[in-house]
Length: 583
Image (tube, rainbow, N blue to C red; front, side, top):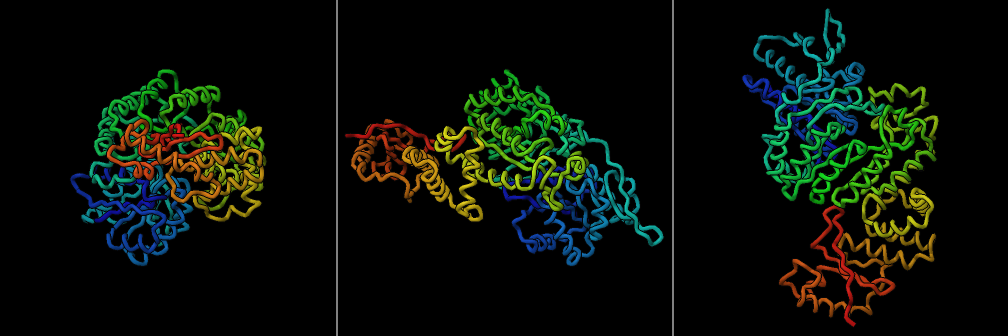
C-alpha cells in the first residue's frame, strides 16, 4: 500500500518536523515490510486544486493530514473534495488541532476514516502495520483498531456505526525516534527553516498552552543530538529552529548543546531557541557571550509582568531575574532577543497590559511580539472561559475577543498598536528615529499609540505601504506633531533609510546634498588611493565606490559613510563611519 503524509505549512520556508518523524519511525520499526511512505509538503498559498492534483498523482491508499491552528480550515476544505477524486483512499488526521475533539470531528466529517491524537510516531507505525496486514490478506478492515492506542475511529456493529476513542499511549522515549532528515537532499535545506527537537514536554503548566497537558520532559541522548547538529552544520543549513518548549529547563542539557554549537560554528548556520530567561545564570551568559554574532537567537516568553496574571495562568517567573539576564545577554551585542507578550490574559485590563508593555519594552529586545490570547481546544484556559467571561473566535485561531477585564474595543486598540510596533520597532528599520522619539513621550506605549492614532486619522491602516512610504508617513506625522524636532528627525529618518539599503530613489524629506557633491567626489578619489575606511573594495575606482556606498550629511554638517559590504551580523545594517569631507 502507498501512504502519504501531507503537511500544509504556513510558508514555503517552514518545514514540518512531525511528518518527517512519523515517516522515519515507521520505516525503522517496519523495515522488514518496507512500507511505501512519502511526504507531501505544501503551503496555505497553494490553491486547493494544486494540492488535490498532487495527491491525486501520488494515488495514496492512505493519506494523513498534519493539522494545526493555521491550516485546519484549509485541511477541512480539502476533505470535501478528496473523496470525490480518490474514493478508495482512507483519510486520517493528526496533530494538535484534532487531538482534543476527535469524536466531534469524526461526527462532523464522515469522509475521515480516523484521527491520531497526541504523539504520532508509534500510532502511525501501528496503523501502517494494520493496513499492511489487510493488504497481505491476514486481516480485514476494522479488525485490530481497538488495539492501536491514541486513535479515534468508526466501528460498524450490526449495521450501526459508533465512534470509539482509544486511550493515548504512554510518552515515548525520544531516543527511539531516528533522525528524521537523513534522506533529505542538500537542496531540500536551501532557504528553509529546519525544525528540530532535543526534548519533548514542558516543566511548566501555562494555562493557555497545550504543552502543559504533558509535563513529562524527555530528552534525546546528547551524543545523538551532537551528531544530528553536525549534519546541519556540514550542510550549512541557514536556520535550525529548536521546537523544545523550554530549551534550558535542564541546564546541563542546554550547556552541552550550546557548547557544541559554539565549538563547531560553521560561520553560516543560525540556531533558534525558546528559553526561560530566569533559568539563565552567570556561567550560561559567559558561554553565550562567546558565540559568533548571529550564531544563536533567543525567544523569551514573558507574556505579562502582572503578578496576579502570572499566578492565574499557572506560570512561574522571577521578573527581576528575567530583567537582569536579558540585560546581560544584550550587553554582549551578539545575540538577537525576541520577547513575547500576550494580550487578553486574566486580571489584565488595557492599562495593566500597557504597563506590561512598557516594562518589557524597556528591556530593549530586538523584537517585541505583541500577541493575542488563543483559546486552544484542550487547554486549561478553555475550561476557564465562563469564569473569565472569556469570549473568543469560534474559528481558528480562536483569538480572544473580550474578557471581564478587557473589552473588544480595547483589543482593537491593541491591534492598532501592534501594527505600529511591527512596522516601526520590530522591523529594525527606524532605530535612530524611534530612539529619539522615545524621549518625547513619558512612557513607551504612548509613542505607538500616537502613531496608531495618526494612521487612523489619515485612513492609512487599510492600505499596503512600501518601506519608503512608511518613512514618508512618519515624517508627515513628525511635522504635524513635533515641528520643533523636524530637522533632527529628518536626519534620523534619512540615516535609518540608508542604514538598510543604498536606495537610489532619494526620498522627498531627505536633505538636498547638491552643495556637497564636490566634497563627496573628492572624498572618494582620496579613499580610492588610501583605502582608509572601505575594506574589501580593492580594484574599484572612485565612481564605482560612490555607487556602491553612500555619504549623508546632517543639518549640523556631520558626514557619515555607509558601507554596504560590511554589515552588522545581527540587524544587517550597513557599517557607518563618521568622516571629514575635504574642504
